[in-house]
Length: 241
Image (cartoon, rainbow, N blue to C red; front, top):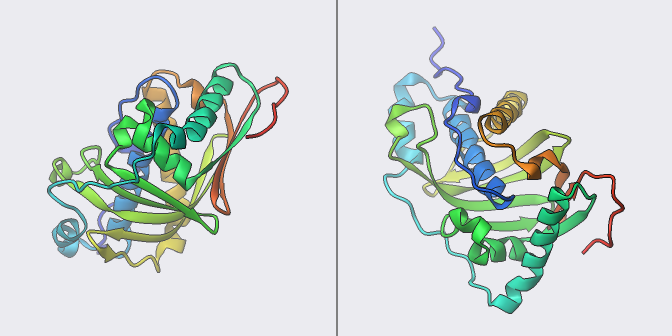
């Protein structure tokens, strides 16, 4: 008899509410990433006998504060300018490419109203083409009754590629409550993990109001120490910031 818990697709999760603009895409995607990673942890060799123990080990009853350096208005200005340019290009179907450093992303989280849902819940680092995200996120969106009032407090390191409506996440490490999760079996589940994540993303787009940002994003890559986002569009691309 198979002792593993059944595969639960992130596509079954409750859609995350979003507001207008593309800042909300960060919060929604972060929540989906966390949900997908928690389900991955349950699938990596965890049988029903260890199900409750695993949930207790890798989830928490309360959030923790994830602090970022509070930038001044002047320090945050370059990040804000890039973000507003990206949002304007998305709305006007203009082709642009914008690069964000980790410090700029953290500045947006700390100061920009569009990222307020991530404030105190997320901190970003980027190095060697790997995104390192420390986070404290509610798990109420998981289709598991035991997690309705639980939180994920931990971090994940992963490569990120988004090309023409499809994500490819290459998970490097995953830590929860100070404990590292063994990813030795991830390769066998990599395709299932990415397919499930993309199904969840597609479903979230159908269940929510139309989001001009994602409709006009052509690609998103983590390269070296930057997150690079390119939008679709027929208009000429201005000089990249």
